[in-house]
Amino acid sequence: MRTYVLFSLLLASTLSLDAIADQTTPDSPGLTQVEIAGKQLSLSNENGRCVLNRAGDPPVKMDMQWPCRFSENKQLNVRIEDYRQSLVLMVERSVPMPAPSRDCLTDLQAVRLFKGQLEIAPSMRISACGPGLWDQKMFIWQFD
Image 1: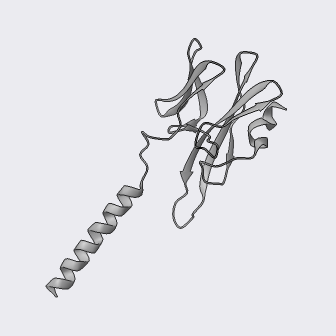
Image 2: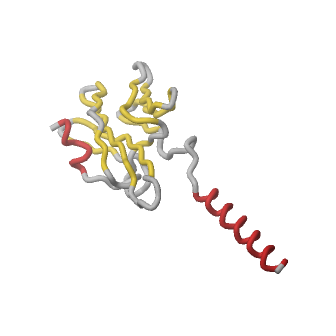
Image 3: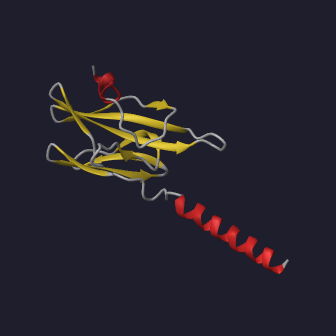
């Protein structure tokens, strides 16, 4: 009986440690810095909100909570779409839905650099888990 109890306790503690190890920390969301057209862009946390920063410009509050990140390409770098003489990148935030669901709620918000000015598209919410390799239309449709 004692062996069974000890084995059960050992198994339970191992499973608990595995669950903790699989969790991502809100302080390390992924890609939060990029250089675009010679300017450094970064994402930061301001009172639980995602904020886009660019040197020389006031911070821009994004329509999503922290943690957020820039979308990535297949090489795990920030994905930048070159479209109609502008550069477009995506800010995203993905949160798993409660069990038993395996889906996520993901907020996406495109940012365009056009003629030296940053333009922020309205955010959209989708039911898919990020980070994802989103279709180019997800980046550009709001600027078409």
